[in-house]
Image 1: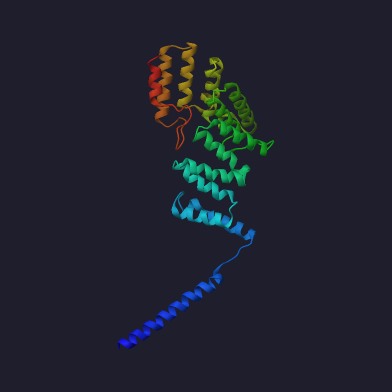
Image 2: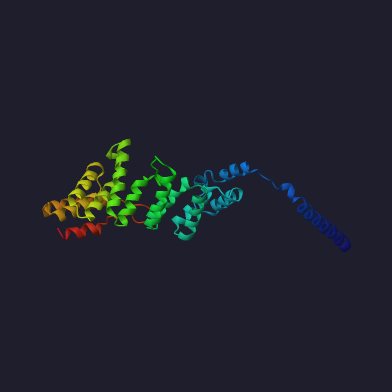
Length: 284
């Protein structure tokens, strides 16, 4: 009986060895070579619907993106998608490496998005302006909207934060001129009025600043605009303490209701907090 066991075990081992050898010799039969055009098509199919089926940054999503890049290393969307999840998780160096590749392979599509990141996430105003200017040169006679924001609006913010107020005003003026061509001021978000007004506030032109804040309040009132209006009125000494208190209380109420400028992941520029409003009350 023992001899039979040894015999059948030997037969099994030989069969297994032959099978492995056969697979290794014929593995080429299971390899598919794609043309360049086919590889590009399949690479794009790998990332279609990623957000719908796989959460951004998950291993499953990364697996599909890696497969897409393996098929087409010049596919800019895949590099950008890999960078996006790293931005949101604060993996800054790796994020910008991925965006650099996206820009390398399709600057017109992604350079403005990288500028957006430099501006809002990293406060690197010089690199943000550089990206916006280079994108603008790629698309003459066209106003770009990377991440759904007017490029002149973002340049205005970048120069504001660099304290180059006249340059900032130049871009905010371009922004408002363009926006008025396609609609009215009711569709312009409150931040634009606030930032434009702050450029005048910081240069001591309080009348002009008040004009911008009032215009914003008329079309898109929120806590920030009321707060800056009070700061300006106090500089002008143009109202009494009771009126100041009314405006500040309204600002505080709007803030509690969520009517203020804010953004996910990072703090907004000149974001208003309840402590800011309370501090102004002490100097009324």
